[in-house]
Length: 210
Image 1 (cartoon, rainbow, N blue to C red):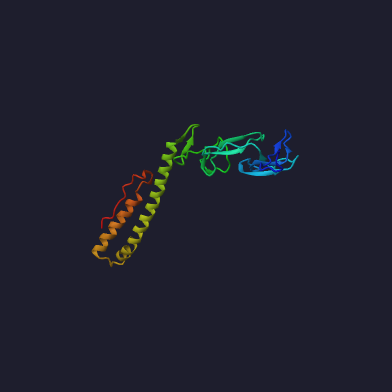
Image 2: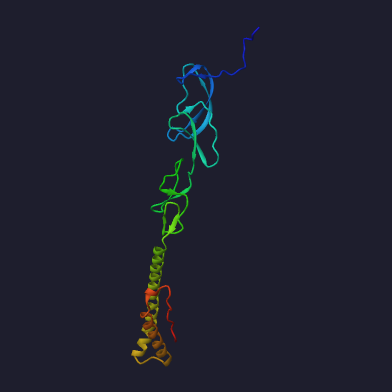
C-alpha cells in the first residue's frame, strides 16, 4: 500500500518553450545582464507554465582555468571560456600609451601586454624595436641642454667673484693676492665662453687657477 507522503523534492521540468511543464525546484545559473559573465547559482521554485528568471540558464557551466573568464554565449545557447586580462596593463602599439584592461575577452589588435623598453620604441608587428637614431639624438639634445645650464651656472659664479675684485682693482685698493685672483677668475670666464656646448656630454670644463 502506497504512503500518502513523500520526502522527494519535486523537480521542475522545462518544456521546449522554456516554461515549466511541472511545478518544482530547479538550479539556475545567473549571468550579468550586460557582460553575460557568470555570477552565481541558486535554487528556484517554478510554478507550472513559468519561465526562468531573467538572465538565468538551466545548464551547469564548466568552470574555466585561471586566466580565463566564464560567460554565456551571445546567442544564449551555451557557456564559453574567454581570456581574462582585466586589471592588467597593456600598451598601445601606435602611441605606447599604457592603459588598464577593463573588459574580459581577447585583447584589441592595437594593444600588447609587452611593455616598450624606451620612449623610442616602435612596434614592428611582432615586437618593440628601439629607434637608436632617435634615441641618440634625444640623448645628445638632453646633454647639450644640461651643459648649457651648467655653463650659465658657472658664468654666474665667475661674474659674482670677479665683481668685488674688479671694484678693488678699479679703486687701486686690491692686494697682490686679489689681483692674482682677479686675473684667474677673468681667465676662467674667458675659457668658459669658449666652451663648445655642441660637444656635450664630452666637455672638459675649465678650472680656476687661483
